[in-house]
Length: 167
Image 1 (tube, one colour):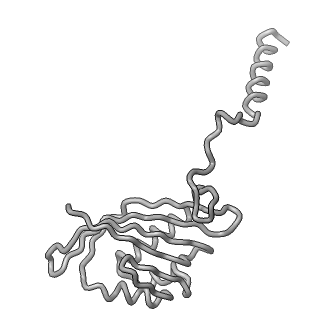
Image 2 (tube, helix red, strand yellow):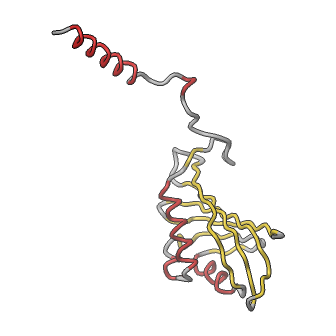
Image 3 (spheres, one colour):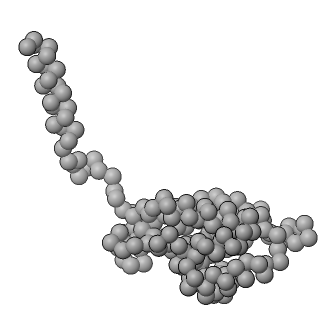
């Protein structure tokens, strides 16, 4: 065996030996940030929950209420920004259909967080920039923040907040 071969084997061996060591505390990324209402840390949640919210947005934009209903648990609770609460998917969809404004929105962001990695379910926070009009006249512009608690690939709880904006 040549000297170059021996050096090559040593270098490769050192590379694998150092590459397989557990990372030291100073070079690891934090696995959580902040705190939850439960008092513990908050972790990133699942992409599948974000995908579910994207599907909800598409069904809502298409006004496909039959499809929209499939994303929510039948016993889900819905708390609206105006303080009204709706129990069950049918009541939620009735609220949507009772809206007399024409709403156009842009889905601006969504992220998923998990407040307890030992239990099923996580939260998705989504933001929407909304323009509401009546008879083609702009009524208001607002930001909507919506929270979806998702477990078993269905929304169990939903609420939103609204911030009217000047421009």
